[in-house]
Image 1 (tube, protein in one colour):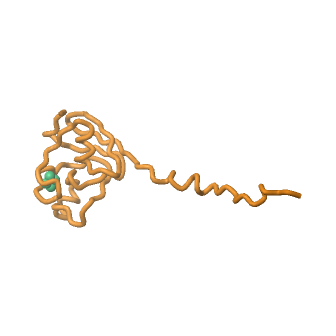
Image 2 (spheres, rainbow, N blue to C red):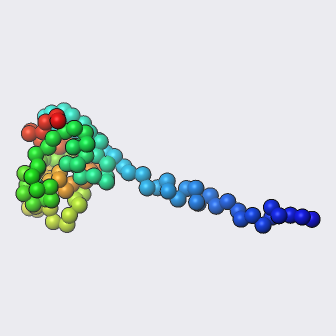
Length: 118
Ligand code: FES
């Protein structure tokens, strides 16, 4: 019996599926009172995602310290890219967020009176 095929390594199904769990989740963010909605992937801050959607939110430092971007989170939840965003515990409890260092963790509604289309 001449069986060269018997020495071929078996196909590994895991090799084909290894890269399929790196997909980026995107949440829908509605900006009031403008009424615009944009997609916010978890790889971007809300400020960055708004910019890609041609939406201008107030900003200066973009690192969570100046509080220029501070706005109210009407619904949903966010995480932060830095350990101590410039908000007091009371402000966080009242629903204030800093979009320049906030990442959507669910669909959101944020109140940004000064938001404009670019
Ligand atoms: S732009 Fe300064 S805290 Fe967000």
